[in-house]
Structure formats: structure tokens, C-alpha cells
Picture 1 (cartoon, helix red, strand yellow):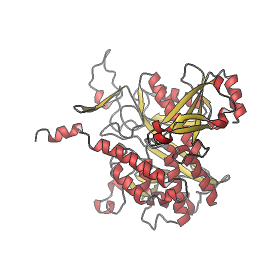
Picture 2: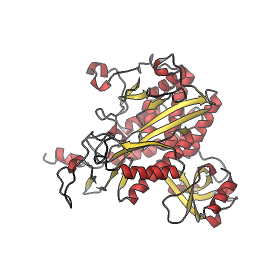
Picture 3: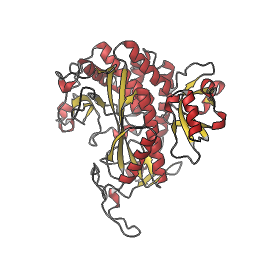
Picture 4: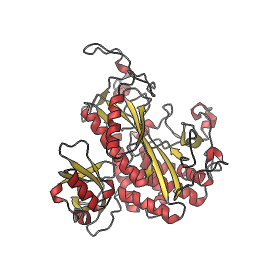
Length: 474
């Protein structure tokens, strides 16, 4: 969409405000709003100034002036504001007009440019399956004398005996019993449909929605694949709509990977493929699971670099509460066709040559999608450039339930890091696949690791309620 088209849209839709947005290192969106009377063609040339020092990990106070440069292709009308508002995503530039190397969106764009420069292909497509919970109540506190969290849901398995006003109506979702039941067990059909309606209204192509496995309102909505940066933009829009529709309905949505102990967590399985123009490069019907040798090398690159990659695709301490055996969590660094216990799965049902893809199942939605998709692409491209073979490297294929293997066989399978600190150690030891291309700078990696280590330390030094159960009577 041209600048002129955006200005026409502002007039035609009686837009009163224009909301300029950018993404921070954590993956959360930030915004500054201008009255539409203050927005003209020069705004898209000069950008919108903001204070970068107030965004964690972005910029020092001595060099805080930064500029948001709007991307007109991302414009859409906000479905939640009382006053007609147009939302536009931006890239971050320094005052001298240079792209800022810590800007996640610019990193995503550099990854796409790098793919084209390699001659391997022209476009990488991504499709995330971002799961979430819809709760009725959430409370938490962490202070000197108190540490707790409590969530509740009318669907919660723990509420079968609860006395409610008007009586308990039953039909609670059992632990691990929530995968695609119909109403009244699935009580959230309408709220998910409203989310989908608004996603479609704002330009997302939604393919389906359903209840997920866990009790207490776990859900999934799938939107159509797109190119790397556009998919990351779409995921931010998706989360914005999920959060705000839940709020309108008097509920709260969370993409936290493991908000409940003892049931499945929420992942963000990411489907990826590479094309050369209109030609899919991952398909070969004469090979395993219809995958080309290029696709197999891509898989090898992802699995080889996975310990470091996971520091970006699973960047929270809570991520590793999900990455434990027994809850469909993909903790095994192997590949397989159709096998959901493997970190990399090759979907084989109803797949066409253009639909041939790999699915990296380890990531979760605490990841910044711009960074996660860029890092995944670079890991896969490194495997292609080096001609890595996942079979020769011992990554499979494993076409059986890995959780049921004898312990001796399990020992031969590499697992994901057990903590965020372990993943950060791996990233520090293996960051060349990110930096050699110039997509990520070493400054970015060092800064990112420092920020994440601070988070890990903040969690590790705090007293956990379960410690009272274990040690109070000593």
C-alpha cells in the first residue's frame, strides 16, 4: 500500500488517530498515537521520534533518540478503540537514518534479504500454531513475604465439586481431555469465533479454530502462512486480538507456555518451507516423507543448532516448565513424519508439493517472532550450505513414540536444554550461524544474553511456594 493510499484510507474511514507501533526485544508491541490531522506524507519520510532508553535492552540513556519508520503495508483499522484508529507497524532507525541493529523487525528483514543473497531460494514461508489459555480469573504476587499464583476457569477440572450461584452445571474439561470436544464441554466456541471474526476483519486469513488438549480453556486458532516478516507482523496482530477480545468478554488470555502444573502447556509449532519463485524446494516424492535433500539438510541445521536456537525460540524460564516429557512436549532433538514426540515433524496428511514443509515443534509464544523465525531460517540455511545429513548425524528418523522407548535407547537421543541458563550457554558457544551472515550482530547477541540472564537470576533467587512444602518442617 502506498503512502497516498494510506492517507486516502484515513480520509475515507474518518480515521481520527494513527497508532504507530514497534516491537521490543521481548516481542511485546509498543505504540505512540498521533491525531490524524498531524499525519501527512512527510510523516512517512521523517518518521516518529521516541525515547529508546525506556525500552528494556534497546538503547542507552546517552543515545536515546530513535525514530519509528512506518511500513504502510501493515496498516489496518483497530477493532477495539472507541475513536477510529489506524494501526501501522514500524521499523526502528537511528537519527542518522540507519536501520537499528537491535530492532527485531529489521533483523527479520535482513534474514529475508540474506536468503535471497545465498541463491538457495527467494522466499521462506512461516506458519505458527500459537496456543493459549482463556481464564476467568488470574491472581499472582511475588514479594518479600508472599509468593503465589492462582488462576481459575469455569472449565477447570478442579471445579467439578465447586458450588456456584445457580448450581454447578458440570461438563468440566478433564486433565488432558480437552482436544476438540463439542459444546457444552467446549464452552468457548463463541469467544474463539469472535476472535476469528475480528482477525478476518483486520486482514488475517484464518484457517480454523478449536479447543486444545489441556483443561481450563486451552485454545488454538490457525492463520494462513506468509513470508517471514509478514508472519511475525500477523502474529503480533493475532495476539493483540486474542488478548483484547478476552478482555471484552470479562476473561483473560495468556500465551504463557506453562500456566498450569500437571497438564499440557502451550506451544508455538512453526511450519516452514522455502520456495524459488513459485517452485517449492522442500518437495521430492521419491524421498522420505516426500522431502527433498535440501529440506533434509534444513532439518539437520535446525536440530544441530537447536540448543542455541532454543535460547531465542523458548526464551523464558517458564518455557522449560513446558519442555518436560509426558505432556506432548517436543523435548527430543530428532525428526519424524507425523510423530508429535519429535522436535521436528514432517506433516504428511493432505500435503501437496507446495504444502510440503517441516514443523519445528519446540518453540513457544514467549518468543519474539521476528527473532525466532529469523534464527530458525539461519539455522536451516546453515544446514543447507554445509550439506548436513540428519540421518548421518543421528537425528532420526524416529517413527515411533519416543516416550515409550527403553531407557537405554532414550539415552542415545539428544534432548533440549533443561533450563534457560543452559540454552543461553549454548547460544554463547554457538552463535556463528546467526552472526556470520550479518543478520544478527554480536552486540545484539551479547545484549540479548545479558537481558535473559537477568530474568533467569530474578526467578532463581526468589522463594518458591513449593519450597515451603519441602523444607518448612526441617
